[in-house]
Image (cartoon, rainbow, N blue to C red; front, top):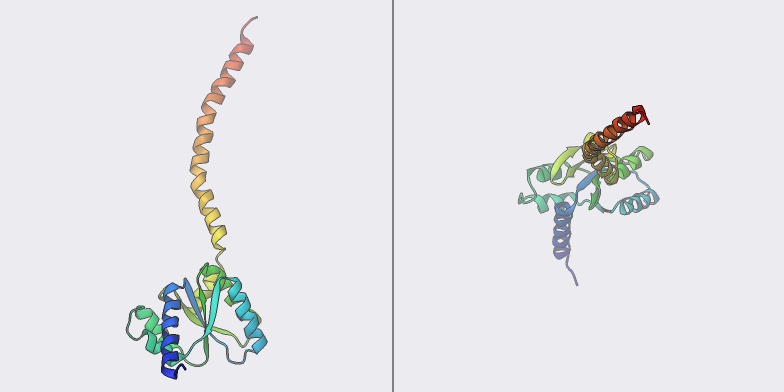
Length: 178
């Protein structure tokens, strides 16, 4: 049989590992949220390669008090009060931020408190700014397009030289008497 202390230690260990592995961790107040809405939120977060956990404030403070996750993480835990849930993203940070932001817009009882981008504390407004970013795939496509533009232009210039020479030769050929 597992005693309460062992269970709490296991929760703290899992919490630290989730913070360490996550791209972004969003903290939100869920007081007044219906159980069906909470379940819907969990489904959306899972679809964004994330995980939702209810925060045990005192245990979270104890888990980060050694400072191994950085001062910002400790400061975030010290500032969290009241019923709080945490959505961890282990994939695309912008995708999770968009899911959380959209859910907060649709549910008045759900309020974003702030978060951690890696292990750096960010405000709720910065989570909303992250939500407005395009997806990772779109950003990579834009980057690739930007990287290809100079090469494409260079190839066009190189192809223009022989093409121009060909036009000149055709013009000369047309003017020569038969």
